[in-house]
Structure formats: C-alpha cells, structure tokens
Length: 303
Ligand code: ADP
Image 1 (cartoon, rainbow, N blue to C red):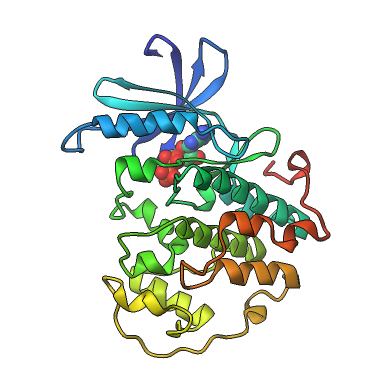
Image 2 (tube, rainbow, N blue to C red):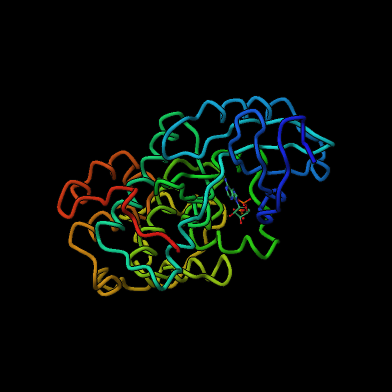
C-alpha cells in the first residue's frame, strides 16, 4: 500500500512516544526509510502553523550525527515524518552481553553523541529526550540522534505511558525540581547518564519515581550545597532535603580512566549554569588522549 504516492509501506517497527513507526521503501530513491506516524487527533488544536514551521527547521538540521528528516506530510489526519532507516540503537549495543566495549569504543560512541548535540545546540535546538534508544546506529557504525526537536514541537512525551518511564533516568536535576526555563544543560546531563551507562553496562541512576530519581542522584553525587547550586531554592518544586554526603566518584566507576572520570564529573555538575557545555566536553582532553576513539565502521555491533 502506498502512502502519499511515494512510500511503499512495510512492517511495523515499533510504537514510539508519538505514535507507530513503520518501515517503508521510498519509491523515488529506492531508499529504505522509517516513517513515524504522529496522531494528531489527541492534540486539541491539531497541527498548528508553529509546529509546521518548526518541522521545516528540523528538515534543515543536517549533520552526520543527526538522523535526517527526509520528508514530512499530513495524511489521513496523521502527520507522517520520514527518516532514514537505521539498523540498531545504542540500547541494543549496551545490553548485548556478547559485545565487549573497549575504552576506545566507549569514547567513540560518546563523541558521536556529543557531536550531534553540539550541532543542534549551535542552532539553538534542544533534544530534551536523549536516551540510549534514541541514539540510532547506521550501517557504517555512525551513531545518529533521533527525535531531535520533537519534544518542543509536540510537547513533552506523555510520561503516563509505561514505555516512557525510562526517560526519567536521564533527566537533569533542574527538570526534576520543576524548572520551566532550562537550557542545553539538560542534554548534557542525559549524555552524562549515557556515558555512565556505557562504562557500567547498565543504566546508572534507575529511579522508580521522580522523587526517587532525585534520591538516586543525591546518593551518587551527594546533596548539592548552596555553593554548588545557589539557584536551586528558586526552582518551583524545590523542597528542603536531608544532607547526603558524596561518595568518591571513583568508587562508582572503578574501571574508568582519570580523564573519563574528570569529564564525567564536569557533565554531572548540579548547577546547569556551571555544567560543562557540549562543545567544551568535545574539547576535553579525554577525547585527545589515548586511546583515541574507535573509527565508527570498526565499532562492535549486535550480530
Ligand atoms: P520512542 O518514542 O519510545 O523513543 P520511537 O518513536 O523513536 O520510540 O521509535 C519506536 C520504534 O521504532 C523503536 O523500536 C525504534 O527502534 C524504531 N525506530 C524509530 N526510528 C527508526 C529509524 N529511523 N530506523 C529504524 N527504526 C526506527
């Protein structure tokens, strides 16, 4: 069955935050694509002009580490977003017990994640939903960020859906304290959680609720002191909390190099104003010291 006279519909790939995703062939180019069908019925005002204008902007975001939005069109009351098809994602890599990730492999995956984020942050687009299954991996091993800007266009994913709870583990403390105005630091925190997950081979901060998520963060890094994060008291959901001391970061990541640990601690900085930026993270000596990042096409991937 053809969609919009151009795409040959194939099997369903999965159900995402905004709707069903299916595989299709672009008859114009012969390329395999993934089409995300976004239900507009639930949205009261339907798809408004602001959203359409933003989607047009997303189409202009072209970078080797960003998944390309090839096409966008309305069809039968749904908005269809056409993306390049990707074979696997970082979650599958991290979970695969047959895969050994060397320090150079971890460095490569983190570098590609940060490069994609840096490109978008330069254009003032935030991701807001960075998590391992949003980091897709293409046939030549290139990692590409998926779902860029969608959170802003379509609103934050509805976290009542069970498959969304995992996004909590990657949320920055300012979001958990209810910050309405936040910046690119939320993506840095999420990238830090992914860095930690690559090192540990399991999600680092697995909160069971938003409150528990903060508890997990406090247990890992200690409660923030006023000198570390003065503005915390102005956040909407700020409550006084009981002091928790910080264990040495080294004790949580016994296998990490000193450079890795230094970068990790700068990405996991409480105050978003002090937290390292994506661009600064890319310039950290972790990326220029040996071992150098593995070439993408030499990275281990699921069989
Ligand atoms: P979520 O919103 O939970 O992150 P998505 O909407 O991104 O989920 O994706 C839903 C499913 O579709 C997932 O199983 C994902 O692997 C698959 N998928 C999404 N985008 C692509 C793509 N570009 N290529 C191949 N599979 C994709």
